[in-house]
Length: 211
Image (cartoon, one colour):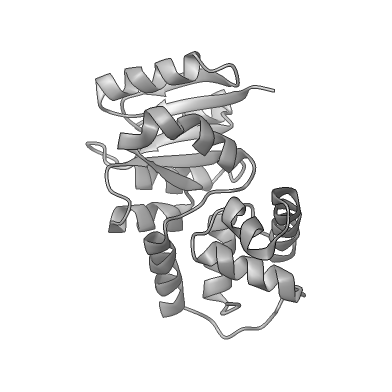
């Protein structure tokens, strides 16, 4: 099954390169590409992509504003932010707005397919620096814990690993279990927390002091 992709990038050369990477991939299909997000709601609602590649910094309305607008009507689509730096406030703001993860522009050609595959499986590893920023941000407005969501001890351990930005592969190695077993645990965590992805799980856990 092919994954439908829409691209938002104001740099013409980079946008063309992204289009080529998607077009030449057997697993991806390019649904549309745009230099700005002026019509983002109409475009996303009409094209119904599985994944959006969204530049954070664009003239006029930026990618963070676009993510908030998309999340107002669509929580299904996976949104990967494209950024030059992985440790700035814009990345944190994008994740808190509802982005599924991010990809450094300098690694796009080598890691685009992998990043898309990861978000489609619910795995959107954050760097430890960004994970710490998310938790700190959520803790600042944290509510007293009112529900432990019946997480098992192992699920709490895995949630703690996710909050550190660890990948599925690293979690599997640490607990000496298969990646499929990790995915099963994480699926159960998402269902119990009523969230859709890793970012939402980490944010909710931090906000409700489950960690």
